[in-house]
Every structure is written in structure tokens, then in C-alpha cells.
Image (cartoon, rainbow, N blue to C red; front, top):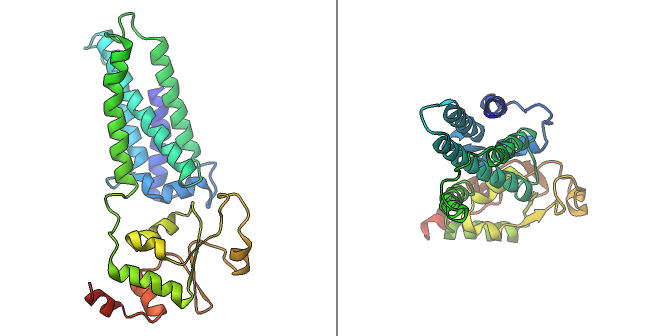
Length: 264
């Protein structure tokens, strides 16, 4: 099963490295949204590559005969529990935040779940080596801690820009000017656009075009505005697609960016 996991994550890491869509995934499908999101990489490396490393360590531990059966089982169990917890977390992020699923990621999740079930069924007689309640308590805490740290890092909570007077002033100016920022809750680039404004993003003239999720019809407001891609800015009746830097938005709406910065 570890070898199967190596094949799946190796393939996903390879497609992520060359920027091509995975099999069974359309160019604008859920896999593409996940691959372009901030959750697809960790410390500059594809998340699939980290999964490949985990499977490799599990395979190495499984093939090693230097440790006793109990010690080998304990090591396998800890590694698989960690991988399963992270995989469940990332799948939940895809479903809740991005409204998307990755076939390869789900396949890896299924492999990890099967590995965990197999370890439970085929454990040594002496396993886990201590009372189950204590075993679970001791093992679950570090796993939950790792997932919590991963969430804080991947969600950008540590990297989000604090609200500045200039960003807040520009966001308010955009609303007063009549500019519109059309986007969708599952749109990766829309989240990137909001991050440019830090906590002032709540002041942007944002219009949600897909409140029901990725595969639901666009709202009549967005359809009437001729929106076809996200994000789309409409300024002075002209559409601007993609993420736009605050300085450029200032130029397009004749906002005095330099003076606003000097006031901070």
C-alpha cells in the first residue's frame, strides 16, 4: 500500500512540477483550483512531494527488520495517523474553502485510510504496548498540533498584511468611486486579491457571483455585468481581469497613493 501511495503522490508531484493538469481533471476543474491554491505547496515544495516522502518513510520502516514487530508497528501507526490527519484536513479545506476536490488527493486519502485500517486489524498481540486510552491521548496530541500549525501557516494567518490607513483609504475610495470587484468564494485568485489589502479587504466593493458554490449558476447581477472570469474589476465601465495590485487600482481610479502613504 505504501508503494501505491508512492505512485499516486509521485504522479501528483510530477504534474505539479510541470504545471500540467492531472488525469481525470479538466483545465478549469477542482484539481486545477487546488493546484493553484496556497494549500498546494508547503515551504516551496508541492504538498504531494511531502506525501511522497511520508510514504517512502513508511515503506522503509515496513521493510526494516532491525526493530521488533511491536516497535515497527508503533512507528508505522504514528506515521500513517499523521498522514491520514493531514490528508483529511486538506480534503476538508478543498471542500469548504475551495469548493473543489482532487481525484489524486482522494485516492491518496483512501490509501492512507486503508493502511490505517490494516494496521488496526493486523497489529501484534502486544500492540499498542500500553492501554489504548493512554496510547490515543499521547499520539493524538502531537498530530493535532502539527495540523494546527499547518493550518495557521497555510491559511496565511501569519502572513496577512495588517490593515494600513492607505489600504483602507483606497478600499473606501474604490467603493465611493463606483468600482466593482466581482469574484467567487472558491476563486483562488480572488483570495489573492483580497490579501493585497490585508484586513482592509472587508472594505472592498466586492460582489459574490457564486454564493451556491462552484457548479451553481452565476448570480444575475454578475451575468448582467458580463463577468466570465474571476476576479473581474469593473472601473469606469471597463473590465479588468485578474489580480490587480493596489497601486494600479489607485492609478485607474485616480487615487493619490503617495499622499495616502505619507499620512501613515
